[in-house]
Image 1 (spheres, one colour):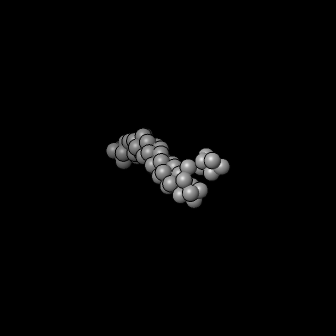
Image 2: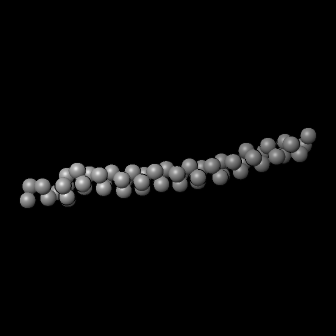
Image 3: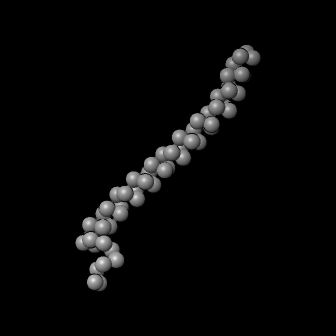
Length: 55
């Protein structure tokens, strides 16, 4: 019974130590993908560089 409690304690400590960096990495990948995707779409929708429409 004591071994089972030790395994639960180990999982309780190690779980967040693995889960938190993985979730942060996934958020960073999502933000990088969004930035690349939407900057490309915005660039094409405006017909070129966004700041050169009036020139």
